[in-house]
Amino acid sequence: MSQKRRAMKGQPVHGWVVLDKPAGVSSAKAVAIVRRVLNAAKAGHGGTLDPLASGILPIALGEATKTVSYVMASTKAYRFTVQWGAETTTDDREGTVSRTSDIRPDTEAIQAVIPQFTGQILQVPPAYSAVKVGGKRAYALARQADSDATSDTHKPELAARQIDIHALELLEARTDSADFYVSTGKGAYIRSLARDIGRALDSAGHVTALRRTEVGKFAESQAISLDFLEELGDSAAASQYVMPVLTALDDIPALAITTEEAARLRHGQAITGQSAPRRSEPDQTEASTQTVGASLKHDETAIAVLDNQPVAFIRQSETGWVPIRVLNL
Image (cartoon, rainbow, N blue to C red; front, side, top):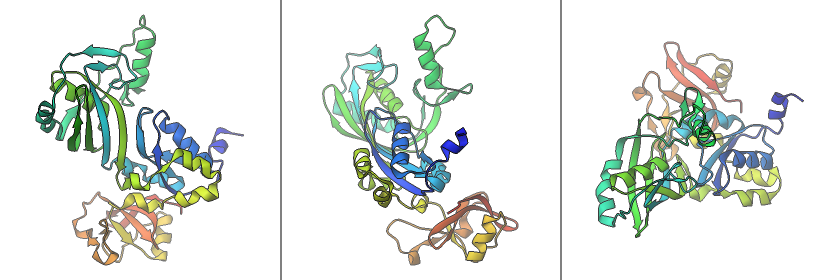
């Protein structure tokens, strides 16, 4: 059997599973377990969680994998613990100590530096991260440098990049550690944030506990544990926990279309659209959704919807609305 045929083994399951990933399990392993339990032909995830971390891992099945980029770009929230007194090579408890400090910041000192880490800030990713350097993952280069001290491989020097920290809050301060809540945009590393807070306090810090509590529209209240999912034992019982593909697209303007227009989009043809796209807001009825067609940017993406099923991502052109990616539901 070819590799492609093996990859397609399973049933055409489409939608999202909001998994509460336990610490100690990689994101890839969690995806594999969900895919096996649901006997799904295709699966992916909406943003990697480190094995050390627990919490929300949205898993896309089937055609939902085409919407992953929108989930990965959404706001994420975390609770995390920083241990003061040491930095590590990985910026978490799994690394070896690389720098120490005798300074233990108090509540007042921590509160004083929090404004430095809100809004748009520059952040250098951890050396052990999935950032690509010269076509290779930074963590692979770092591990190679650690394993062979005689080689010419050095730990990558990663450039600072701009990220958005929407909110940062101190939850509790203890003598040797502190708990925080943070809400971030795309590309933020909590391990780097902990390291940089420690440095701003003239101390040293690394993450000892990390939990993701929100990813876009997905929250802890919707999550199912990996143990419980495995206990269900078969895809029929587990399927009730598969959320619709459209769940992840609440923030994208939606254009209601007809059956005929859906057929045109599926064949790669443009449609004129009889109404402007509407953007749904949380806890609002269809009657109160906001029409946004006039305010859409020329290159902004909308989603064409037929009977509450997404048909295609579309974009305005001189000929009307053109499909840029069709969902086969």
